[in-house]
Picture 1 (cartoon, rainbow, N blue to C red):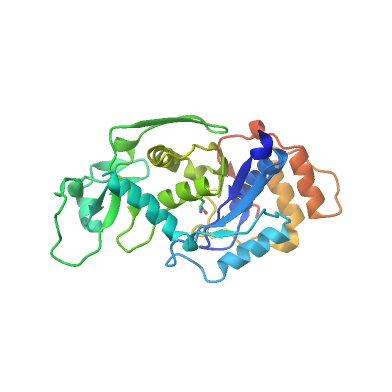
Picture 2 (picture 1 turned 90 degrees about the vertical axis):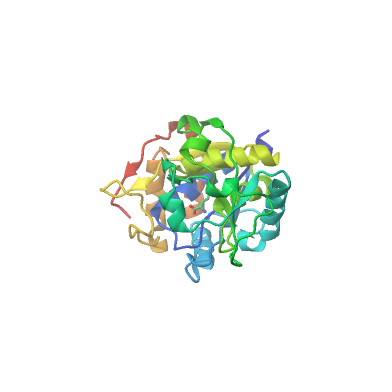
Length: 302
Ligand code: GLU
């Protein structure tokens, strides 16, 4: 089945690539190529308010500079909103979603409690009668109506995961009141539409995966194989990101950076190479996902 492998790297253009995103990009690339699979790039540009101008093209230029060559054309989520709308319409028709008019303040003050990834929505709007209309012309958010449901799956790196979705996460938003699509819905629709069957991504998304698996099940979409690679953290245990001031990748040091990432991914040290493509080929040949550790990796080396 390996010729059917389809993997992907899905950056958000909120900033430039850094060592943490390079680790995810390289892990998904090596896993795909070692299975003779396709490796796609999808730009997750759904929230213009969080975007950094020029980041999308800078990210693609950096991937090219690192010889992380993708298959096909880059997909931009901003151009696929009709697909998310279709998925929402199906859930609306099946009464699996409801309109939510709660302000952020109400959501906070009426929370059912602290969940695993933010607070658990108290459910006020789940009780609104079907034809109910608000006093103002305020647009609602759309939330998923969750039954009592436990999601269990096996992650190739992090092992068995169990999440009681309704109590640990609660009814989550699919379309925000400001009109922007939520990541959880878009990612599920796109992974399925693009035929992606292997998802190798950062551990920070492990807790989101049960939400995505549940959405796949109610939309009748296949469940991909999941592998969540360890996060790179600073000495305070915080994930390297734009917020923790991770420096942008220095393309001039790309060989050193790729070697560094290989060491985090337990790829044996490569001999001297003529170019970055040969270095990546070494990684493909020596890739063994089952050697990767599950714990976060602390580094101050950028
Ligand atoms: N766009 C997400 C990010 O940059 C990744 C989404 C995913 O891999 O599912 O963190």
